[in-house]
Length: 136
Image (tube, rainbow, N blue to C red; front, side, top):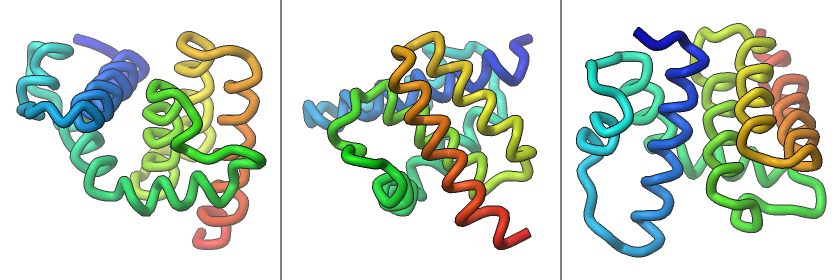
């Protein structure tokens, strides 16, 4: 059984695949994409992916609000997926904020460069302080 960090990596990979497939206008089955990455059913993965896709427009607007001199569509698709996962967890789940931010940073350290990791950290920090903390 995978731990939560590994499950977040699965979520990021599936969101990335969805972005590629939608950009190329190819048909896909979300359940198949999830099953390719994860052989057993997992509610955390399924609920997170569905939630990110359902709230994607709001998540992208929020990311763009806090991206300095950048926009989501300028980021590569892996970085978009990591940022969307981080924002989704901050805004729409019970995941502790520090965990949501740290997990996104760790994914970014694996899949991105240092500058992008800092940018993702900055955006998630702003989302936390400007959007989440005010609601607590």
